[in-house]
Length: 251
View: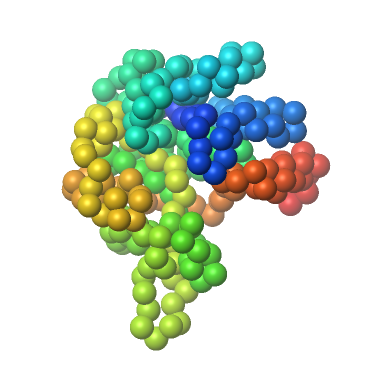
């Protein structure tokens, strides 16, 4: 990695959520969820700065109280990526810098995953990166788990909620689950947000398809790590146990 290439981590933290309103403030081991995501993200040595981006006065105040760097963004963004772009502009990210969109609902994030995400940018041709890991058929059949197929060089071919690739003889176990972490060159992030929602994006409800439909390549990085996200209140118990096990040194 070019030592002169700056990398910024931005954690979008929206208060409103259909399934889980106020999710970033959910308490886990005595601290709000966004605090755990921030603490893990800042351990990535490649990131020169990590910032929380919110539209909520409550989240903003809680972040300030815990000394978590935070910026206030508009409340009408159509996606977390748009919020990330606004935050990047507020903190004056350089045009040639890397911006990492860090999901604010993954308190078990492994910082190594951010390092893996950033590594491909040593190639000046790489514009966007994301992660994927090997999954089994049961996981692939879950529509909440997005799947990705990619070329020999790692370039994404397609993302889907459907179990792809489809195998006619029913013996396929070659599935990769997409992990919703992204890194963009700042110029590409601006280009993405300037594009209108695309046809396939609206069908699958997957905004990364907007990149592919606009001929913006995505480099997929394979990882052995996984991060457990919080989608619903009942998920909190599971991630709390993971964090407790880590503290106790249990595998």
